[in-house]
Length: 224
Figure 1 (tube, rainbow, N blue to C red):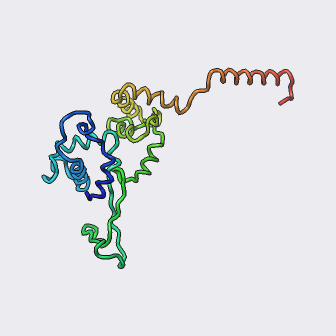
Figure 2 (cartoon, one colour):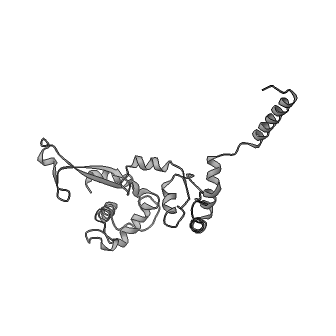
Figure 3 (tube, rainbow, N blue to C red):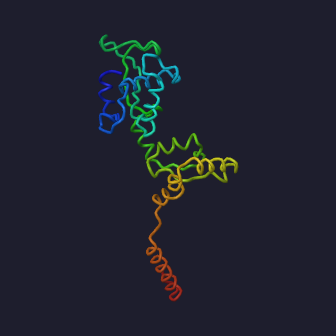
């Protein structure tokens, strides 16, 4: 990681507990080393246990990665690059050769999430509303809850269009794999917030107006 990249990413990282006055043991490795290790793992598609010896030991790196991943911080830390051909007028000292793609030119960088989506696109996806139809398995539901903004996941089912056994499978995953408070919110609270019920007084007033209008039409036929 270059000094310029580190200067941008450093502000996004949580401050360790000891320097922030929260106590705890001193951290053994610099956050910059940890990010370099995670980027190397993602870039080369290696296993955690196959991490090169130039980086901190993988049992030290993985807890850091998990600590950043769980609150969604990792989505802000990926710098994606693309090799583009450079014109003949570009100086030699600002261009290079991408041997893998056989491109002579420059690399341009963008902050993306771990799927390669631009962060602005990811934010748009977070603003959508999702239901749990065929998405409440132990593999899919945590990802859905982490992606969507609070209150944007509602209960949904593909029954009767999906086979009963499939619908039951996903219903069981929702009932058994979610915290009771989250389950209550997904099953009811989020929907009530999105589609609030009219106040009882308004319903009564609307019913009274409808009844009065009907009586008036019965008493005086031909009036609108």
